Image (cartoon, rainbow, N blue to C red):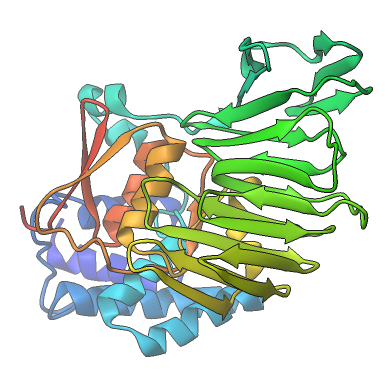
Length: 384
């Protein structure tokens, strides 16, 4: 591509008049040899960073011109004023997902080896372990009655699990999602729990006694059925969350440093490290187990449950957390090579309902370099 034609495409991109065919040609040039430093002609920009900044300005102009939601604008512009150009570009590319690529399918550009290693998005699925040790792979079963234990019926319907009837038996069930799976379950008391990938919840088939007690690993979102006579307790190993009836999200993966409780509706009391902390809606409590530090803050609680709607939320997340989310959902091991800054932070979101290669394309535009080797997602430093 000669410099004159490139300049014409650049101008059209910034003005928002570029056609789909021209956008494909321009994106192909921009993404060529991404493992090498991009050579931007001097008449367009003096550096890659300046080039990204100009494209960012063009994006914002296009957003304003097309009348996208105020929430998207307010997320972009303040961030633009606060951070360095490279970080800004990373945020925008994540917020916009594949907007820069104009939703063009780049699968035709991949060679056969890349296609062979691509990973499809996760789906609905779960393993239910009964009190007798029997395991039921829920995603392999058709809708309907899947088990009947002493009058207690377990039913699968439209991607969720329900309990009907009652039993006098004292027994516990464990629902668990492997990597690449998530599932919704209605507990015997009518409360609802959504399990994110690589998560589990253990609960009694009948809530006897003064409290309703469950224990979890991983990430679970709850909508608890109100019952003033029986508080609902969630045990994580580090914390106990006590509620009467409310909506909240609990995230506690054993191999990660943080335990996080986020409240969407109602009120909860969190007992953590000998302290009792009350949370109100849009408040979050973070326990850093490595530093033995407890911190409460105000957040947009809806963002903590975006995974239920099929969206990766990267707002305020560091690179390690971003890649952990991706690794769990695509059932792939994440490996960081030496020299990668795992603490760099991001903003924005992108769909979970796309192949891994498309998510990695967005991350590459944000300056994150990856490769897939034998079911390992390797993150390596720029220029290596």
